[in-house]
Length: 273
Picture 1 (cartoon, one colour):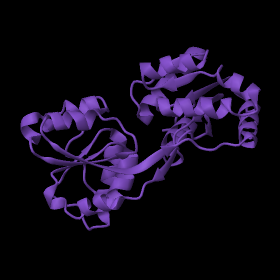
Picture 2 (cartoon, one colour):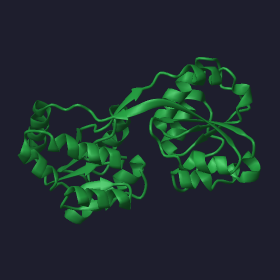
Picture 3 (tube, one colour):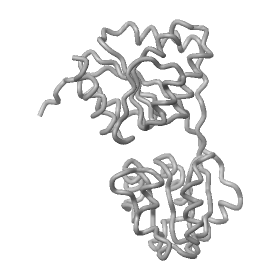
Picture 4 (tube, helix red, strand yellow):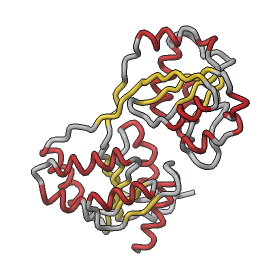
């Protein structure tokens, strides 16, 4: 059945890292929208320490492996597979749907534990498979990016689990030249659109976006950026955007999934047409 083109004349900036932007971009295009990919976070692998490499050689002592994000799956599973197949006794844990899908794609296994309704550390910690009685004295490896939240590990420790962190990637602010900003804005402004909206998945990305434009010599582009509507994923992000000077609509997607972003964009667009 032909997809209804209900995003005609809408331009959406997709700011996710390059490899994570493809699915949402395709969904928007399939609905008739125009996409500008402008990643505000770059993902870079981190070399494992000797201690972490040694830990992965002794997985018989580990009970659970937690993947914080799709990037944690990508880089964590790559490291795991250097030492052969992932042992069957390990319980694999993910937080979000995208991580679960990536895990199945790379290993052929679905997560043993993953939240059902909400996709964050709090929802994962509420899962009965991570109760105090279940994980007491169990050993965990948590694959994550550099500088992640401590809530998950701290709570698991309170439940008497033993935690090992392995940081396998870092998130960096891209270096964007004035020429790139000028080219982007010419492309954006030159398209025949009735509206523009910028999709953002994290406060880190939101801050990076503003810093990139604020440091550019193109002050007109910076001022216009702050007049652009946004779709974000939390109330905290909405408040941050207001504090940063955004003056147009700021809508909140129900979740951070591609489907939720598309649903939010469609709903917002319907109010404009």
